[in-house]
Image (cartoon, rainbow, N blue to C red; front, side, top):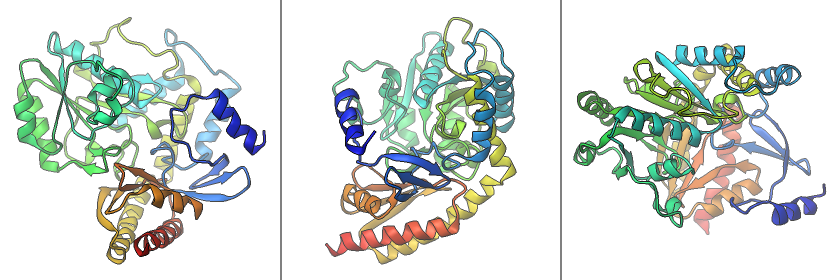
Length: 394
């Protein structure tokens, strides 16, 4: 199809549920994307963190190619070896428990909410946090602490209380006899890249232990190396009762997962929850390829080193560009809070060949692939500096 035909087909045939930008991408490799006209773009926000290993990593592609010619789908009332292998791998990398496979982060969070309510046996309220984001399905939306996403979809399912992030006293005040769990992201990506305090998280773990509450950690965006550890909770010296995963799990293919501690893992009995496509052979092979790459190519080590390097570069940028108000983040997940709106910055950066994101109107998000190279960081900072300087001068 020609460019205008593609745009017209979207206009006529696809629901307008996204704020589209006029790029048509046809090829990706590593940290780079190419559009339909052959222009290259440095991708520093690959799919909200889906591209943890960049685009089309060879080990992911190898697993997909090998599997696609043998067996694409098998329903979950049968067994297949790669789901078993992946589940075992995830448990070995995290904590003793069992896995439920789904197709997205929202589905993983829905599963966690159902498991918590079943565990509660009458207790059903879950405490979540202002500026949280847990997904677009109805229960995940109710857990999300941003009214703008809930507007127009009322009545929102009951059973969720939002309190201030990093405020332990607010959590304590919100707990009642109906409370069954506390659910949070350790880095609020969509909320502006807000990082949880270590004392706050250890306090939450203590409260949950003392009051028989479940601690649910949403690692949809932070899982698989994004914060410099395999999972973000490993930076905090605690273990969650339930963890949800998605985004980077399958190297670019749609996959979600919930991991629950062993003592919780048999609460959802047959018939209580399901996912038709969850944990299919192709996505399991992709995920195993991604995990293999992370271990063989020392991806966590690169993330830690390049994260420090990116932070240094961003600090220099902040010092030379008064338009930058604050830098927040960890690993290779950073937000630059500006004292101007960020939309124009994102658009201008894209016109110069750098893809980034803006959230909360004025927070630029940078989440490059975990195997990003120094020269790619240098190029991204050079482009961003030029854009910010121009914005400040204007």
